[in-house]
Length: 285
Image 1: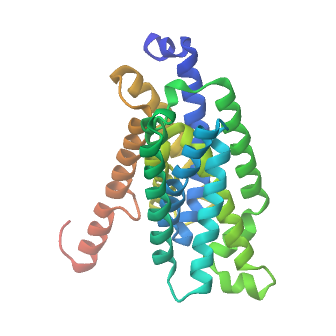
Image 2: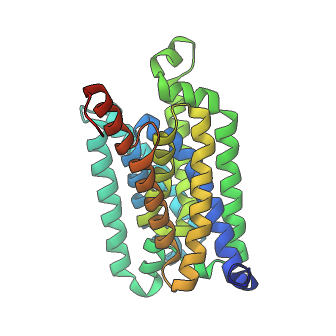
Image 3: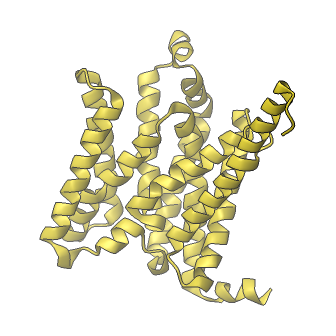
């Protein structure tokens, strides 16, 4: 008990634990839709594209969340515009937009190095989270979760069968824009926890893990946040005692859980599939 309670006596640890857990859980809920729609690369693109917005916000003395949110929405709009107004496919548009904006961010950092801490932007600054930062994360998290809850049925239909959604009068284009907007808000929220580079892991790993454990989407929406929340708590405690990067340890913890599920999932794990194939072929597993 002492080992568990001692870190909780430090205010910075409590703030880091709260911000990481909330960020991980919200990202996990969104990741269920991203995995089904096939937008893993989109999460990566948005998380990297916000870098110039963060740098400009630091330079202007504005809250970094404002700059990040503006660039996230701009990246989403540019990707959609390229996809809809040219013969380019979505993955090509994503690659063009996110690499260009991320490179612009690196250029800005090199021009104004004294104004921007690149390490904090790229890898997060959990141990330096203030009460104002924590409030910002909670507000953005509440906004994202509220939208996902209100529109969960339409978004789920869009993920499984956009053609049917269109046939019953639901606009797949609007739902796509809505989901991208939530992705932008969630990315900005999670930046405080793990930074630009690792935020994509929070947006993909929990949903992918849940996808290997169940065939029902309603269960995915429960399993993914549980996996993310437990991984966040375990990762923060482990990082405290190892004196390691909190965001990095959280993501590694999620990766370990995913690897275990990938191997040992009762229905979709590698070992289970081999055992079923061996039984069908009449060969001992």
